[in-house]
Image (tube, rainbow, N blue to C red; front, side, top):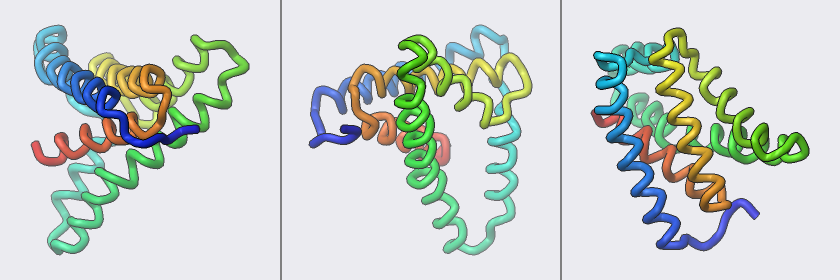
Length: 151
């Protein structure tokens, strides 16, 4: 079963992991690479679309897609379907394969971008494996996208 009644301990753990990840991506990666890592073409496309939206309705729908639809689709596919389908290949492949594919579809082109997306995918996978439920990685992913959208 992918979903359960919300468990406050799992929600709290997911929030703590979120804060630690946000701190790492915001302060850790720039300290490692000496600058703020540029995002991949995926983020560039999103920024371009946002800059061309003039109607509040289309802006709202696009934001809904980024904060709700995108995380649901990505989590169901990468940490749901791919995760379960890779089970016969062993636990390591089951965890690494969807994480690598998640990073790849976000079009990283530099070491910094690969590090950013592999970190994000790895953290989402950690939430999925630790909580044993997909709903927490969906909530985590949605929260991440909302914070990124608002910043």
